[in-house]
Image 1 (cartoon, rainbow, N blue to C red):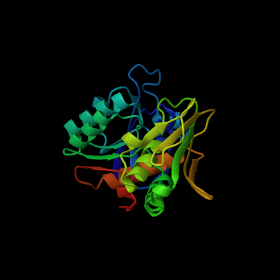
Image 2 (image 1 turned 45 degrees about the vertical axis):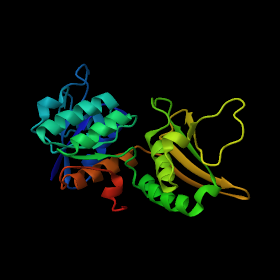
Image 3 (image 1 turned 90 degrees about the horizontal axis):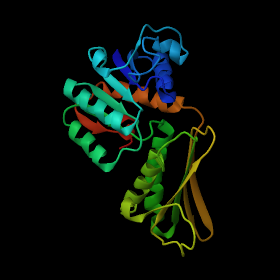
Image 4 (image 1 turned 180 degrees about the vertical axis):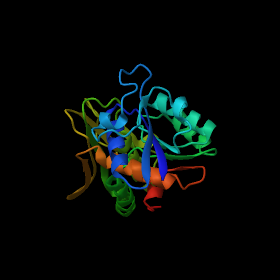
Amino acid sequence: MIRVAVTGAAGRMGKTNIEALHLAEGVELSAAIVEPSSSLLGADAGELAGVGRLGVKLVGDINDVLDDFDVLIDFTTPSTTMDNVAICAQHGKKIVVGTTGLNDEQKGELEVRATQIAILFAPNMSVGVNVCFKVLDLIAKTLGDDYDIEVIETHHRHKVDAPSGTALRLGEVVANALGRDLKECAVYGREGQTGARSRKEIGFETIRAGDVVGDHTVLFATEGERIEITHKASSRMTFAKGAVRASLWLGQREPGLYDMQDVLGLR
């Protein structure tokens, strides 16, 4: 049995992660962490998530539960995540990171910490999205440079980073398949007299509206035809199930930096 802690337990993803752990086999929720100032401190995590009493009380400091878990699931903010990664590395705990918006320096720190502990970092834990990553690699390599490429993503109004981590990863997969550097060929939105589109750019369009959980489309278009690969998430449970699956897998791994492609055997 893998003992799993959830941080950001009072948030939308935190509560869904708790529910997914409750429904899964081979794992158990053993700790739940919220902000130190939360009015929910001491409440039962299961009751908060709507699955009934689990006997796991919400705490405000990860240091108070370091002896209670093997793997931490973190869908919080970049700064909080990096603090948690450092603590986990110091105490030999494994961590599943679903936080988006990490910068290059923070991603580099994950690589360093992964020499000490097992870390799974994925911008999207959905099994379906990760299958799309694999398919897009094949499509991009087959189509080559004759197709214009656009990535369109839609999320709820509360999402704070743009483009989404998933959209950026979709762009990276396509760029890598075509031998391009996304930092050099990405174009984020267009306005005014932009001129004709260059053949090798990869465009990103971001929509924020309502309660959309997450829609992503990669468009390949050329004269006479277009191909669209679309993934639509209608429930956060799809991400939570992926995170639980990742926790089970990571619990058996040595130090290293992994992602969902590793978990699903898609390498």
